[in-house]
Length: 434
Image (tube, rainbow, N blue to C red; front, side, top):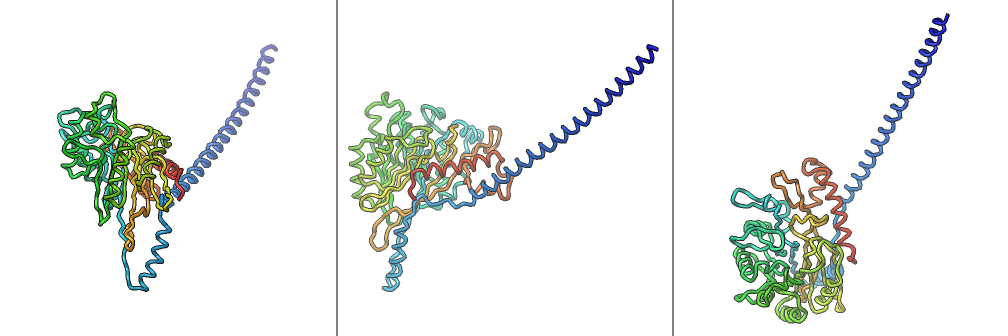
């Protein structure tokens, strides 16, 4: 009797367990279905957001980069003058010249390692993609922020010294006029300055911003298509300045209001247009310092037409200021670097400015006509890659990736370029009134 009771009890337990098991199974199925639906929704939303973001990015790429400045009043005047000239059968064409502007030219240790080829160095791949942006100009300028000394170890910290092949490949990229007025100008004393200046000039560079016992010219004048342009260059100071001798310091154009005024006065007597290249500002800061504003105002008020700043290693705002005579003057507080591997978030984010200057065919007046820029980026393809570093035209490469060639860069690099494009535009336009 007791055995039958146990059997009945066991049977009830088995039936209960089966019910629980079946219930658990259905719960698991339902949960599984919910998880699948949830995952599908998440993937769907993500894909939708990705498509929306990609469409937004394409819109950014398709937008034409607006000129930082364009003299529209002068162009309207041209139309009226041309109409009058045709009626009088007299046509005097204006002269236009284009000056490409790059930033600080640096050669970091990782770049040296990338360029090493046996016992020599080849940096040409770093500039291959941007040559066309420079070589179509009438003149291309930058700041050569390194030294080129024999029998001295290469260094990118404290005392800068780079392989001589670097200077050759920068020259081949199109840069032909370089400022030597920077904080590393006399890292190796007067003799280092002389060796570097002599070597650069042997390659065909025009140098400005330093003097020697034999060359006492504090500025230079270039004549392009009949237009005389003066280039002056100054630095806020040099590294370890307190340890340098008075004699060493006299060969670097350290910014000094009195000396600068003398230079500007002389330049105005000899040239039609005045450029000043300023090494100033705070490193890794996209904001303008009070010191930059004060010096910038001083220079513009005393006859300078265009100021090109560098040293912060990042791009800073730019603006056009119209003086009391109605003359438009341009100041780029920092054009960032031309090439480097400094490691700051925005130091690889660079640009090449194109400054167009016009000489009126009738009056002979020389003035700022237009300022545009091309955004570029120093891509790091990874330590183990051949041709690790390469400068690219951001819009050109990003468009290629977005529309046709997914092998040209990685998706991560693409997103970096798009982010950089937006950041660059926001920096540049923050003070622009155009």
